[in-house]
Length: 350
Image 1 (cartoon, rainbow, N blue to C red):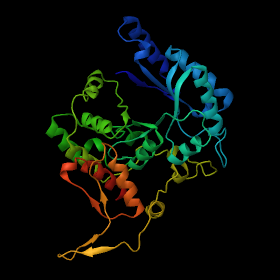
Image 2: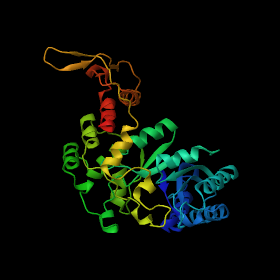
Image 3: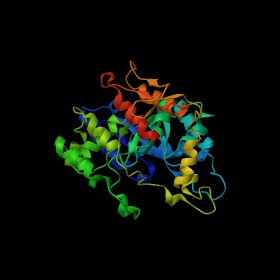
Image 4: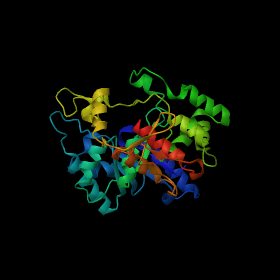
């Protein structure tokens, strides 16, 4: 491992600092080899609080800079109509830390695309990373597409589906690690379910943060580098019907604001009808699209999207653009070797 994800709130950065001191003293791993992330907690969002909080993080970790600093949540603990101190104030204080060399990159965690857009409107230093929950039970396909368009890397937390959230948050419902499709894929590949989920996260386009304090599982979770999920297995995990946040942030809701509902926090509707209304706003309907009736009675739209000779990674986005623009005819071929990307786009659209 060369990427350690920390946070002020976890209250264990002093232990990580002790471990780093031991490793660096052994002479094999140097500071420049390790990517260290930490996160600013809710009570340190004020301009005058940001730098002292980061200085304490650095003292605890026993290093002179962070590779990445994130705002942990778009929350400060205030009660009222808006978040105070504002996210803008916090972001600008973090930009100062980049200028001073205390932090190399900055980003956010648990932010919606709308909240990221708000930052992009005034940021001098663009968010480098968005850390959010991502796994086959919460794929976040639209958010990943958005971040790809904006040049923002996505890091996935809870890549195993947050198995401890049932107890922590009294969450009921299916557990990803017990999913029969996952079990079948793991059995076929002779891998553990955790390894398959970590590998899925890599192929899904994210960096991932599996959590364990067990030495055997820590080693096992890293054994995902020299193999891939076959396309059909990756796509079967992409097609799991259950889609829900395991860590939904409901503990931040307050009837007096700033977040009265989950829709306020995540900026997306949490009821089916409202979600459908919002989705429809992205789509153009071509009322007079010409079609031809085939000899079996089926109708074919006369204008279709060709998918031949696209570069790797391009056709997913092109298919999304086409379907949202009004295309209803997609021409594919086994030989084009990109039908898996088209499938990913169809999963987002459907």
